[in-house]
Image 1 (cartoon, helix red, strand yellow):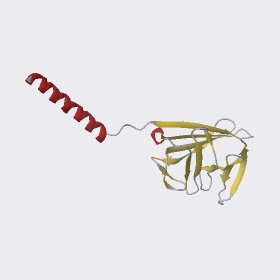
Image 2: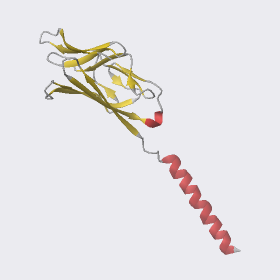
Image 3: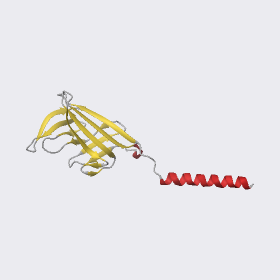
Length: 157
């Protein structure tokens, strides 16, 4: 009988350790990475790659402004000439922190599409960005050396 009591005690101790370890040690995040490609009428390409934690189970993702993000952990946007040559790329979100003052991005994980107002890319003189309303029209814009916006091309849904 003593032998079975020792086995039972060891079993209870082992189970207790496993339960406590799972409680104290968080499960690793399940990151989802999405890529969205926008083709303009003149052949420019804008690629956006972003990731978020699937465990949050977001119904809609909406990020805007500078600072700590709600859902997205990283977002990079790259701009290409019609020839395929890279023009510029920007890390708009790094480690859950949005870097741009005018940054705005919405994504519907269920429908797998962007929505709402979009403003991704650069902000300063000589930089490019994509801006507009996803449901109607997005504009590819370059900021001139004087800080003025110059529309280069359009993306229609």
